[in-house]
Image (tube, rainbow, N blue to C red; front, side, top):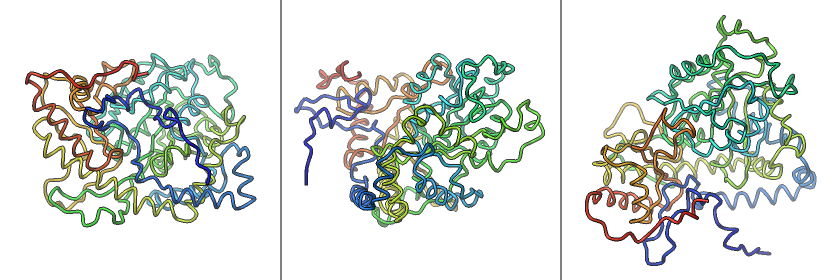
Length: 497
């Protein structure tokens, strides 16, 4: 077996700007990173991927197909497997088993850029509306696509994205300008420019952990239809959901099988199922324009297989999926991640992906969530409130559901900021946490501010470090008003590059 030695620089995670801060002084406490939103190494399906890769390369036809340029819409067997899997998983919502609705992508982030290239026009599209608090690394993608200075925050309430605030924002821009003013006249007939784009994480939102209600999802789709908006739903946590027992219950076996609770309808499901009202039919758009729909599911295998696979998918109307496959970079290089897509197709075909989710990924996250929530309630309860994902305090007739990677906490004290706490936690405790301002929409921070919030991730660190990290944070807050010794750690500005 040939082993390629990796230089330290090759092993260093790419996101040093936010996730790898901390002193390397051996005399300090070991770094604990409760910011990083990565899957723990222990849950990566290494053995399954090794076997699947061998299967791909052992079959001469599949080997050649997976190593060549792929078709524009992606590896056809994976599209077919996904269509069948999604139609079964979301069977309550009548999801059709139609590969024509599926387009394979290079992951949710890469595909967001492709969506903007093919379905927006900076001269016609008014702006990007972002549900806040937001996944902070999406903002640069929007800016790189010509929307710098045109990102707008839409606050969340306890039901999801505030549709009344969003409609007021839409109305500020008035009637649509003539499409002839577009910079991209070549989009038609296979693509179109939307007047507005709305970015949301409807299920287990990052960072808040909350899930939008079904009623709010319907309201959002109706609003998108009315104002020619495209809803980009970041659907990366739908398969990472679990039941949450009450606080004094005992999980029988953290390594046991965890089935998925009944899923919520995705926005793409709502858009397909929801009848069009008369005002939708008379909104000034022709049938050819409306065939693209107003909501898409931008999904990824990063959280359910491994981020390094760089593979995802879009589910949308057949017209939208076809149009997305016409993006210039895809037409030139073929669908991204062709070899990874073939490997994942084997995982799905053999049932290994479903088994991994049921027996490894969900049980691990359910247990880690419980550890973090219990630790926060025990050690930080006097300082912070869990906004979503707290353990119920007693038996209930309805089992709570949670999912994703994060807990979103609100400070009780009003005289200190999350940014100051984050800085001191790093300096005094070698603890990395995510301060609320990180999740404000870039360029529109005033519309939705979160300097009284902190996000903690339970997916990355070892279980013992999760609890130890909470204890360190509690120590920082408990001694906030006490005189401090000289900090043992410091922030190196070079680490933020």
